[in-house]
Length: 357
Image (cartoon, rainbow, N blue to C red; front, side, top):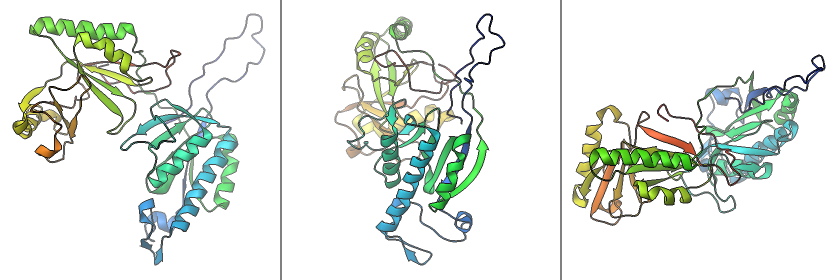
């Protein structure tokens, strides 16, 4: 998708209708792919390495050495640097971040909407290739880039930067494609997680408490990135919402699921409860199941059983004797959604809205 934003057009000032106005339309970007493979290797006729973990393995009669790998990695980073310079991109917004392991200490917090300078972006790209940094889509008005699978680098650059691709080919990388990128419209979460949002969540909980004649709770998911380390879960009542609102991070997507079905169970019956949760929602049989101790804090300490994973044994559970089990909410689950703005009230994160938000 295009990473350019619609800047809009200015109206002609009164009495100056015939004067030419500056072009404020979004920059049209061209998509190209950079790779280290010639045509025979792209077709699979010749075996070639595709990952940092392949160092020491033999491909087409040659052993991949650490030195050869490093030279290749350096070429990709140099290519990205050349294209960023030609495009005039000095900063990037992180999009589609996935956190499956903790980010390196030098990087600090990683989240959707974080702005990084070019040096940090290139360092992240290098770290992703070697498995030391999370994957992300780097976006700016001038250029976008991402390191994809198998050492294919996806890049979007403006027309005036296309001439720099010749330098990339001279370095030994291959350039594939040259297509003008059309912008794809997506419905995004535009609401801010302000006082009015939290008040509405509290009112919904109060209404459910009255109907159920017991205090209702809601699952609040705070998400700053994709992946298993990209979110926190809170199971809260209306009285807890103010403390949660004060604890969530900036630029996170806040999703309050209002009709969560929780199965209470003992430690020895957790496996059966997981099966019951799956059977009770057979229409959502690819969903993960979440287990948490009922005696825990509002911020849940959870174990997630992926939909195709085996049931947990006793050693895989958190401390405690009583647990709650619920199916991860489906796409059409009832929810209220908003984005937590930064200190200045701005929102740099861009979250795709669900059909029920």
